[in-house]
Length: 419
Image 1 (tube, rainbow, N blue to C red):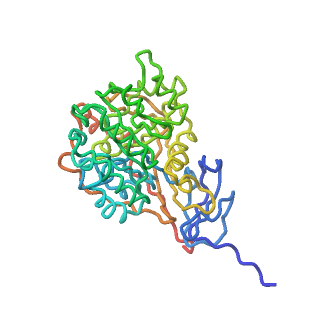
Image 2 (cartoon, helix red, strand yellow):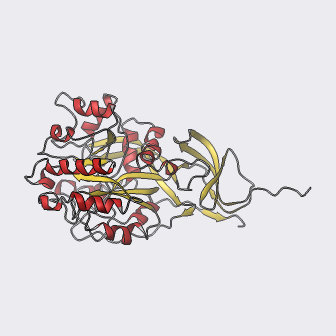
Image 3 (cartoon, one colour):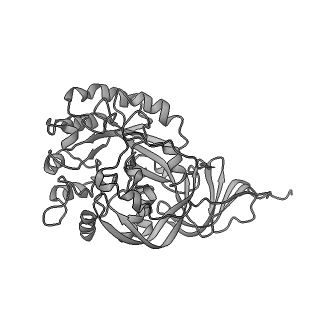
């Protein structure tokens, strides 16, 4: 009988420490990739033929990160950044743009951002038909809350629009009260999709918002220090939010430039209230700091006492299931080869919340490689920040402080297997 030929891979990732809550694999594993998918995960695949080999010794290997709150409509909105250049240095392979586009502006998001991007981009449609062209005020004119038009846009784009977004605070609503959220609730219920609600400073109040939330909805900015915070004056979780969470309300971080407060986070964590998902709310301001990027945000939660598996779970398998795309949340055989590699740097790091309250941490996640569908994303320079992308005055000192990791960016060496 002819001798059986060894299994051949396009890429081998060798020697890394897997952190994969979705499959329950933790520890030393190799990964074989073929035709853009995970073909094998085993304790050792060294010696198998492959076109290229990634030496991941000393690295953490995780599923590609899923950021549940982003703004990537660059050039057509106040907030949007470019996903691909940021993804290549952060390990985020799936991006959920939440509310950048409304019904009138979504076609551009699809054609000029979602379709040409290397990373995976999904969206929650803003109930306001103009979306986030300006920094805020999108609900101040209720004529923009066209439920029928929004429903038609969602129905014709079900492959990428997965839910509805409503920013509810004093600036976005500007005197029209809770009515935009009532209409967003109606839209989400009619189409059977989740609703993501942003909170910050009221009015409206957190009680008015809570009355319109349902199991399966996503409350983003859950650790905001604004007047709509979910923390009672006694330092406990808001009772209505507690009941909703027990029934399936999702608490999402959405750090951003104005929505993450260490004091609120610590009080809720002390109660055993962990966020269900950790997201960046990355945009033209937040990327300048103190948020910076999703790995830095994750490092803040390591400093707050969450374990590495708990942190990675909240940016992989949990958001994947919320998006209805469970194949994107793990490194199971047969799934798309969306993979991120990190060094977990040990040291003394100072992290800041949006009020520039400081906390000390001992670990910092630094991305070294990002792969989508088995292909390594090249590291490229993003476009310059927009002219209006000016941090609030109280955060401008972050430019002098800088990112916690000041060394040159780490890039992992990848070699051709024949070299």
